Length: 286
Image (cartoon, rainbow, N blue to C red; front, top):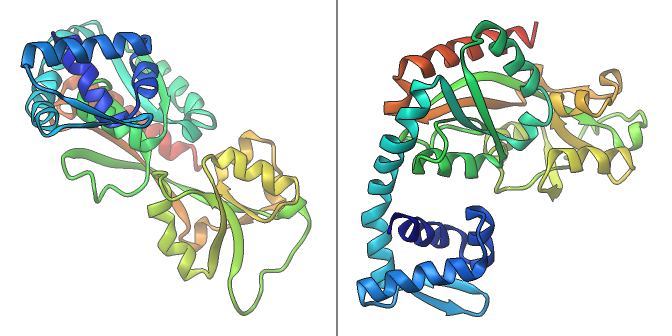
């Protein structure tokens, strides 16, 4: 029964059988069977098919709204409690962070807290936040503003400076008047909302958007335009920083946040991990 309810909740978020199956790591036919079993038990149609997409009926929406908090509590009892007792933390990390400087950060934390076991999951920041809310992840490292995350504890670990990678690494002088067009991250990312205002203040305009900062960097290196990326991404790709324009001292930086549900943040093990991360994150910029 719980698996069937989790499947309906996942389907409500993804909108397609294929995406729900991918998230749940089951077949599409298994997704269909679980939803059908719920419909037989509930004696109501819970979904409607619209082409390849699936939407919830009014009954489906009502059921998801009622069971989502219950599923979160069940995960807390049957997954989080035993996991914490074993000294294990399940966390989601923004892909661009985990692909750049986060592994070195966690290696330092592991040296300080050898008794803690980490289970990592790389996702986009919005996905990490959703899975923290649902109880799938215990904590997360995300980018972006915390204003919309009023239901979570969100503490800034560091402000990662942004750098401008010149097109094909050729020397250039920013225009004295008008805007500087750049390639940078797309609007649905966690980072965009936190850098948009500073970009406007600095007369930097997003001309092209991509889903990954690493893709932005590679396009800039290939000469498709100037790329605006985090410093950590530039370092990971071996881009010479002396050929980039540093913008962190001008206020253009992306906040990196430690995020957890309020009840989870207060747990002693999580507090120890947060304190170690906060301390080591400050050392990264020294």
